[in-house]
Length: 358
Ligand SMILES: NC(=O)c1ccc[n+]([C@@H]2O[C@H](COP(=O)([O-])OP(=O)(O)OC[C@H]3O[C@@H](n4cnc5c(N)ncnc54)[C@H](OP(=O)(O)O)[C@@H]3O)[C@@H](O)[C@H]2O)c1
Image (cartoon, rainbow, N blue to C red; front, side, top):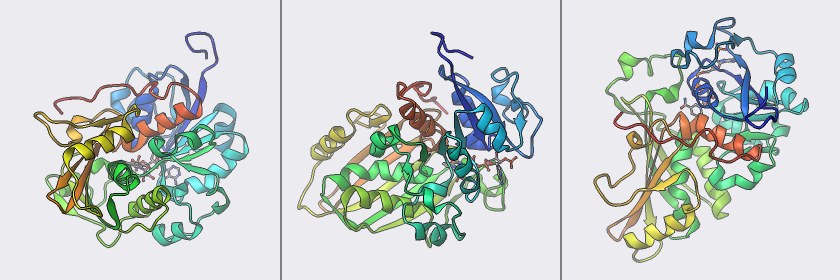
């Protein structure tokens, strides 16, 4: 199949296409002008049409059906594969796909952590493809754009890691906060837990909650520290507490920091954020007006991250970032990385405004 000017389209596979991030990828890719989805896997729904699970995609994939995961099918019918499986699965299939020359964008946590000991420590299982950790690039374009451009394996960040790192990056780079005293509080909607309910995520148990979880150490803190230490080349210490809230989508990071300088004001912080993110296509700095602080309901359905930092008296600075966990926190960011890897316009297929009201 060719694009509008007659060049062949990039053939794409989506492993784990029946889940929430897989569905969101299919939604975004359905209108991407340079790619065609050839393979969409689901063991549970193999043989069923895409709209059987993703009812919102009726008409968009009239000829595509879910299939079982087959390395042969993926290698023969795809140039690039997105992997949207729970932890522990991608490391089994990605090595064989890479060997066949495919590009991989992994949304699971399998290749995010650089240190070979970290995966077992945080995910409680042995990693089966440790040799690939060196080749994987952390898929946050605002931090690793040039490496993503030349990568064959991109490991997209967790949703809460995306919001936390984007909130904190300008403060960390500008060297004005105590890197060993950062407190991150994240509120996140229920879709972050995937489509399969468990006693904590099942709707009747989750609706209307405001519940802290994984307080003893959420896995995302490992990648947040990794990335902020890479940025600063110094030790970083973070207390990170996520909270389940009743919304379906959205991740809001509120990051409390302590200053190493005497005083900082709104103008200085605004300048620091504007300088760092001025050229970023998907970062918006929230200004004054009716809505003064980032709020996920203002970015839902889009690839935008809304950020802002404000001084807290003469003690510290509080940095915020709001994203849609399934878009900038997952599928949208993955497509942004794909565009960079394929040397396409970075905004292609994801340059849509958020929904409002939601
Ligand atoms: N939800 C979010 O906000 C979010 C954000 C960023 C990253 N992530 C990460 O992205 C990944 C997917 O998340 P999700 O929310 O989309 O999960 P999900 O809704 O539970 O979907 C998981 C998908 O993986 C497939 N799958 C499960 N076990 C498999 C196996 N052993 N072999 C092959 N396929 C398997 C499932 O289909 P079948 O069981 O039918 O095969 C399903 O399509 C996870 O690693 C998650 O941590 C999620």
